[in-house]
Image 1 (cartoon, helix red, strand yellow):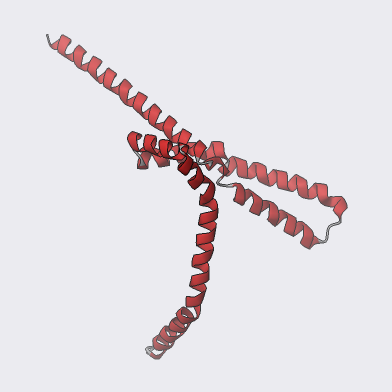
Image 2 (cartoon, helix red, strand yellow):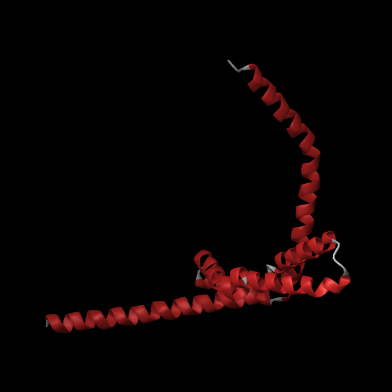
Amino acid sequence: MQRLSALCGAILLACCSAQVLADAASHSADAERFLRLARADKLLVPVYAQVQQMFAQRFAESGAPDSQRALLERYQAKANAALDRAVGWEQIKPAMIELYTDRFDEQEMRELLAFYQSALGRKVLEQMPLLTAQSSQMAQDKLQAAVPQVNKLLAQMSAELGSNKP
């Protein structure tokens, strides 16, 4: 009787484990679908562009003739390969999936997918980079107005600290 009970328990545990693994796989697949919809594989395009620009600027500053442009392109390709190894989509995709599955349960992930597959969701995805850039610029512009006052306060604090020296 104990053996039968232990066997039933083991079977129940195996069934539950299989269901948990299936749910985790489904959850991960939903997160990957969401990341594809959100074009997360394009998140680092600006980084690649910035690195390419750094090489082009260094090339220009060196005064190298255009006949040496192949050298620039060779180094830009090497830089892209280094970036691919470090932060290419295939390198970061598992961590990105985990990031989303840790923060959104399966139901929430399905709701996110449904929203971003809708017309409004697609519009949000299309507009988000521009909105983020514009709101960042707006905040930066507003912050610039506070810089003189913050600098004045830093100077006043430094003066007070200087007068407190023994």
